[in-house]
Image 1 (tube, rainbow, N blue to C red):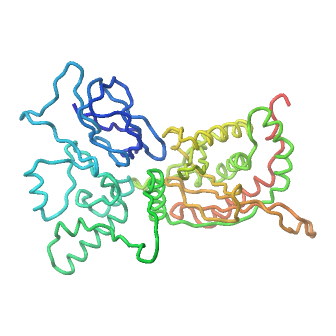
Image 2 (image 1 turned 120 degrees about the horizontal axis):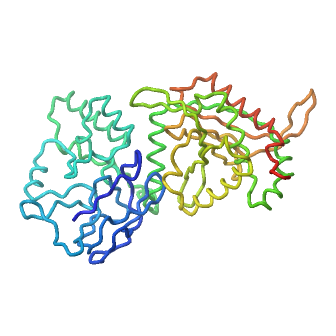
Image 3 (image 1 turned 30 degrees about the vertical axis):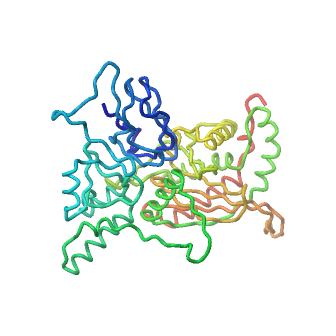
Length: 430
């Protein structure tokens, strides 16, 4: 029988093979992990649904695979190999591209075909993100005619644009659309002409980050708002309570304080806690406050989500944030822990730098970026004082949010930091 990739969760229709844990000829048991798949920056084990002996492995490490694609073929215990009604083995998949391997005559037909067409025996559509599928529907584009440039044949926004440009060019020149026009690979630049180079393949996580940021930047009209928060008093309170938190197993960080403060403007301005449903053109207002926190790992940026921030104390947030960040750096967070965020906070203050412009983490509508707090001369009560000022950036989706609303939100967030109440630091019984 053929073991195919099951659906991993809502919106999770593809992933990249990072580890294959079995070999051809191995006897495996039901629920034994056969490979590990990276999806949406989480690494998930894929178990075998039955026991048996592995005949063939159809994928390799680094392949991008989609739901319904064959992973392995095996002989079930006390069962003969499955064959089709004609007595021929079932069609398998090419591991290098994740595409069906047709019979010889089918190959000849494909070569002679006038246009490229994606075909999969399982009937699954060509791999593409929901936003790409939506765009194709709106434009009346058949994605089976678009040649994907990403591993596994995944279709990107650039692929769709290139497809449209080729159609326009063919129509203008009044020439038939050839198969070769659809298979034209991206141009490769030989940088070694100008000196020595070293090449390193992009990691699965980096490819995921690249695809997500390109999609967000291409489809979300960004607006950036800048401000500064006087966190002098906040840092004094943090210094006072940090030792107590550490004794209780929690590290009191500025990120935890920002999590607590962000709830204030989110409740006051619910559009920042909303998302645009592009398929129905509806604004979805969420009645929960799940905030993502950007974590810098050796493999790349990962954004786990802290759930129900409004219902948790500062101590609970500090402890959970430290635990989740550590598991994220070890790549032990689950897919569920990376989903459901309503806002994201990216704090680069520990590294340094001032204002920066983070990209909205789609389908969220906004992200807050925090720089490094620095001592600056500030006029207070008609006198110049040296205060610690924190650079704050708000990036938001201009389809949902206007500039005036962005100014109000960032101002309220700054005031929440500057007027942070000491009672939030206190622990029960202390």
